Image 1: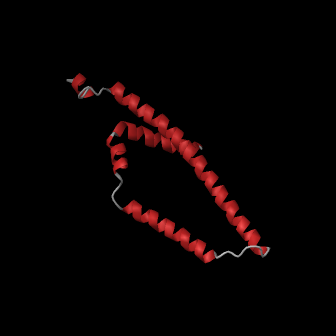
Image 2: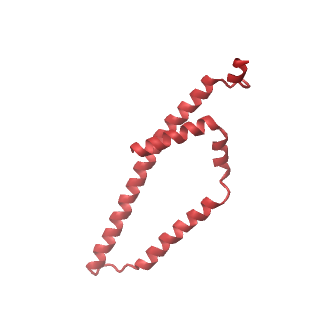
Image 3: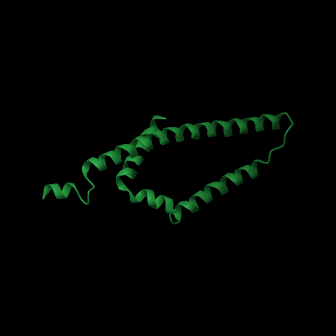
Length: 115
């Protein structure tokens, strides 16, 4: 009876552990890389805005800061609208494999924190 509970349809604890571990490893690597890429993008955007401000003070460039602020608001509202809707099918297929998804999520969070 115990063996049946631990081995449902040929899917044993060892297989589940391997999937969880592999998902955690892959998630950790992707989380670490995602944080590094996000930091790089933030630095590039910050330097670009600082350069715009410098060129504007020198009279070389005229920047419409209201348009830049409006574009940023539109981008965040679009992301909020997308998050409120139905998740994409690829996300549903990832979430359907619970051991891999749980390992990936845990690894991603650890990798993102360490990155």
